[in-house]
Figure (cartoon, rainbow, N blue to C red):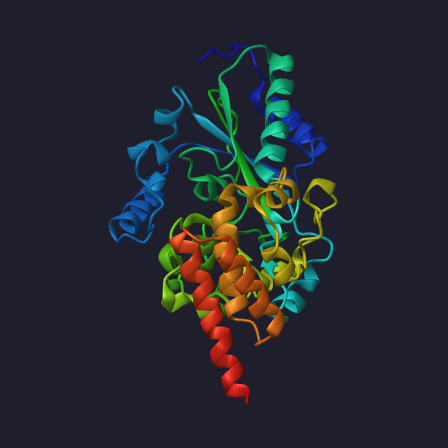
Length: 364
């Protein structure tokens, strides 16, 4: 890793870095050291309990996740940034969730893939630093490597980790993305909060459809709708399908109910505005997409990461939870005929068809 010059005024440089980050569209920047001992213990206990489900990447890198210097040699500081993403029409989320004929997509995924947006901006920020001081050691991350981003963001003063395990900022709620620059620049450390501010509130725990928040600050990923609709590759367990409702990609319930999000401000970043109108899509129309249409309509979106099969799987579950309708049954029958040979998808579609039939009989 290139060594930075010795004659740097690090306090002044941090002021410049903060200004550049604002110019690049980040709402906040902080600097932390690399001591994550407390968070490492929490992570190891969580993994030992098997609460990570099939997310094997959470442990396969050993201790690199909680020891930044093992991931990138000579790292002594981590620059953490936040970028707000709440779409201007986020207040419509409740209306979409209340309409079982529509599909709900987590608000973070409505626009351009945040990994690409933030990684490019962080690289530009790093290059500005390099232009100012010369070569130095750095590597940028946006949810793309074994990084304890929420722990580092908390240490850098961007907020505290709430009972739902998301980072919360007193002035901005939790509707934001995080990104990091690992560096060997010994920048001044930011002040961080020594306590959380959730108090006695349990709104996120109470509202979770699948009771995935099994204790304050502890999430059982195997029950979480975001995990079930995004991370899980195989069939969705039967016991959670009804609770998923019409959520076809992720779940925002724990953020929608959080009192701190009354301080959130809609983003002005057009990359995060809803694309291919997916903010309130009709489920039957989504089911009719073939794979080419799925790929076209999710180009540049984080949604594409789950692939066409999981997309259809999630939509089938949502349609099984919708009120009985001949249109829904017809759409399911047609898709069932198209997917002969795909046992996983056929099972989900047949589950949805059976739910529709039972609901129709109960109405008579």
